[in-house]
Each structure stands twice: as C-alpha cells, then as structure tokens.
Length: 114
Length: 114
Image (cartoon, rainbow over all chains, first blue to last red; front, top):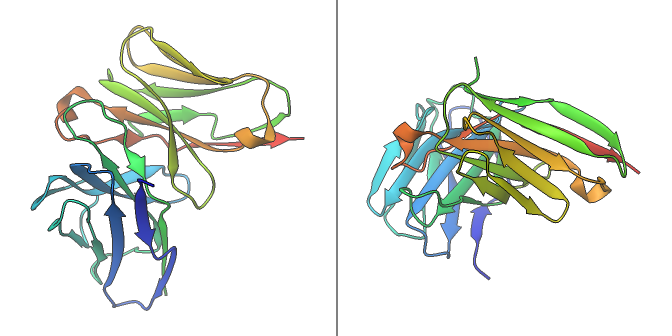
C-alpha cells in the first residue's frame, strides 16, 4: 500500500531537548512538506522540499530544521530554540509543486514538551 | 487578519439535514482544496477547484468556486454521522504557484447528531 507514515504517533520530551520527527513516503513523490497544527489556527507551513537535497523555509521555520537526503524521507527536528513546540505535526507529499497536485497527508505526530 | 477565512467555526446539525461551509479569500486564488480531518488524524483530500464557477461533487458533498475565484463553499446533503469531523480549505495563490505552498483556513468542526 502506498502512503505516508509518521512516527511516533505521540512524543513526549523535556524542555531543552531536541527531538526528530520521522516522515516516510513510498508514493515516489518529489515534493514533501511539514505543517504544524494548533487549535483554532488551521495548518501552518514549517518547511518544504521540492526535490532531494533541497528545501526551503515556510512561514514558521524558526526553531526547526530538516534534511532531504533521500526522496522518500523528510525528517523534521524540533530544536530547543522553538519557543512553543507542543503541537500536532503533519507531514505531506505531492507529485510535484508546480501544478495543482493534491497533497497527501500522513497520520501526524502529537508532540508534547514539558 | 487571516488570509483565508472559514465560516462557521463550528456547526452542529441533526442527521439528515443539509449544511454549507464557506471559505473566503482576501485575494484571487490559483487553486482551492478541501480536506476532511478526524480529530488527531491526518487530512483526507476531498476535492480541488481551479476554474471560476467550477463545481465538483463526490457522493453527497458538493464544492463550488465563485467566478471571481475568491470564495468557495462546501455543501453536504442529507448529513450522516460519518460526515462529522473538521473540514479545512487550503489555497494556492498565483505567487506561490511553483512552490506548492498551501495556506489553510482555521477549519470548521462539524458534529452530526443522530
């Protein structure tokens, strides 16, 4: 079955620790995205990658970092510099970024930092 | 102020009733996507609209985009408990046509009472 997997489903960390969220897709999609969802605010774009070994900042990139070493993988690191890291994180992918391709979403990771 | 506004924020309807969710943009869209989300899960793609005046239907859900490409509506006919969830609209704008970047509305939470 083709799709996007995110792991783990729930993640708990202490303040000051970096944490990496996994995102893997087997859809052979070129473009991948990371969004953050907070109650009442919809989704906000953190980072996106249009092709392997290339990525760009989204609207709220501060305190986050990504890598795109393989086409199928786009991990997100939440660093200790992120002031409000507790949120629901969603990874998405699309066939490309130029045309109006739909984005397919993973099941999400809920991160709680205390 | 939000670039993409959804209304209402929440909706409770009796099973069998019709309902409409609106999505209004402050500027002309390149494309408009509708997604559905169960709480704590990923987004499921419903429909994408690109042309002014376009209308698409899937089962009991119909989405329309106005001629000016600034407003979209999602209409559910004869609602069922399975329609319950969060509905989100996402917009692509002409300036971001090569990035695949989506701007999301805040979401509309729908409850359907049996």
